[in-house]
Image 1 (cartoon, rainbow over the protein chains, first blue to last red):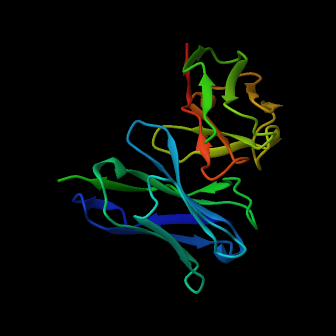
Image 2 (cartoon, rainbow over the protein chains, first blue to last red):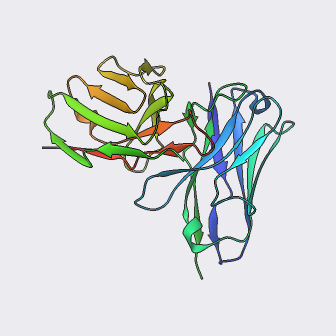
Image 3 (cartoon, each protein chain N blue to C red):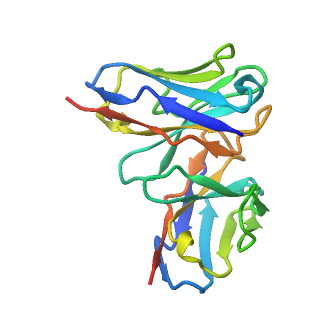
Length: 120
Length: 108
């Protein structure tokens, strides 16, 4: 059974950093495209970043480029999102999503999310 | 960037009625469109991908149609559990992956 569990959210000051983790079970994350999607309070869904399942290519939304880094640790079967230079507008629930293989970005399975609050 | 526009913003219907939700793309996304359901406090759930393919475990009352720029999600006979927010999403022309702004389906 596919299970996805995000952690690492919390309260951080503007300009600070946070690393989100996404622990996966029931599948091997290195074989699949993995994606982060966020949702600001009361707002819609926003794609943040994707890492491919084939060659570890990474992709970022303009809002994340240069500040966020997606990566994975195959030995831990865990996906990460390193977030630096955080802004108030980064406040959101961050979802980790399992996609397909190769570069298939169908957003099949979602974790329950972790809340990031950026505030002074 | 492909902009997805969903209509209506809010749809008020009764259980047993048929729901028709629309998603229009600013340029063709071929059939690379998905639909998600989100209930309060929960993560989104994939309903439909590639415009018309039901995801695993999704009831047959949910169906998707369309291609190019115009797409429809139909719920044939609403059940109480179907009242939620629905989002469309495209993966044809990415990055970025983009979502519509959502349609809230509420009980009349």
